[in-house]
Image (cartoon, rainbow, N blue to C red; front, side, top):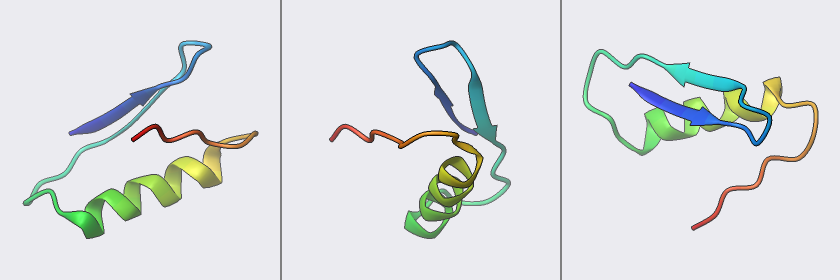
Length: 44
């Protein structure tokens, strides 16, 4: 499972049944940005 929490406390999550790799991360981030009303900040 991969999850995030916004500064307003809203959660976003995705259950992954297989190995977590860069393709799954990109899939999650694309869904996150499509659902976001504003810009998404990804700290490194």
